[in-house]
Length: 252
Image 1: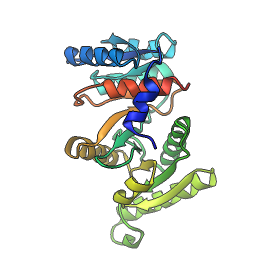
Image 2: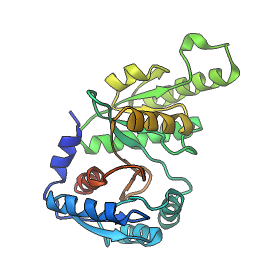
Image 3: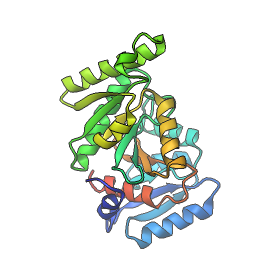
Image 4: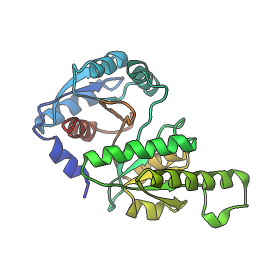
């Protein structure tokens, strides 16, 4: 089973170089660096320039990157420009209290709004989980139960999109199911949960983490060939995100 502890174990003694972004909270970044180095997760280099962090990752000067508290818009724009992608797709490793770990996506408010993008996120998330030796079960969420069709046009579109995305994913050999609006079941049974859209995914993330106390290790950028972990500036420590970056980079 994938847990925060199993990821930390994978990261130990990696000997990798991880770049950590530094925004306004320099002391938090320094504490994360010391924690990660003391635990043997990586040698941590601090960056206050989003562009340089992305470019050093692209050019293999570092093995992985963690955004830290650099401004999200600047950090993701630097990733888009450096890696020449039109949009950044991310999925967050979450572990609710007393529950199992899963990948939640989309977590960016502008991600996952089309059927094609939902399937792409599922495809990339499944590939990431396989690197961690898990053949994932993917659950596509919608805004209601199937029986809710006809109550509102927007709800109908959400339900139909989840059904269509599930059908496409299954046709590609992905173990996928339509979990409807039942996130409580998906969290128990699925390794990857695809929210109806980026806004609802972001709200699920924030509710689980900031109100529910779920562990949130970070959100790898799925559609680049390097390890870049997006993080929330509200995290109290980036140690677990550095561990995640190290664990994933060690399997490249």
